[in-house]
View 1 (cartoon, rainbow, N blue to C red):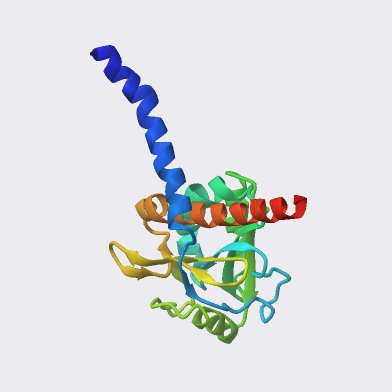
View 2 (spheres, rainbow, N blue to C red):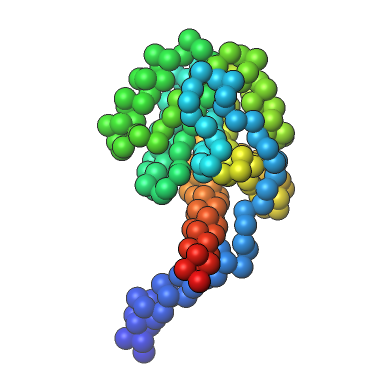
Length: 210
């Protein structure tokens, strides 16, 4: 009896868990689209674009020095797990004049991981406000044009999130103050959107071969 229990724990339960999560991605399909046509970044001082990229979009704001912990949480819990996926990037939007603190943050993050897909972009206050408004979320920027929340933007510049979150109902963004939220919610949602694009790529490749 004891041997049977050990075998179940070691072999059967992991298999069941794998099948559950694998079928979950297929059965639940696409991560819900909450806002279509988020503004791209042409109006900011950058060549970085949202179009054709899977982007984690954030706004560190003028007080970015006190949000280093948020960037660290995002780096450790999300970026490090997914940065090697094709077309994945993290983009942090900041007001002009914060370039030095952005370089400091990137230097500190680079000691932990490859930050080649961490992008820091800068713009005038009014441009940042217009970009944030294009998300059409229920969240707001603070007086320094920052927020602890980050957003999942797909390759077509649509904001993706949850329409039936157990805590918030419609969930537009993810709070980088909360390691638990990054672990328990955002990681799952990023997995879904990456699986969605991988599946689409496989279908396209199969159609070309046929």
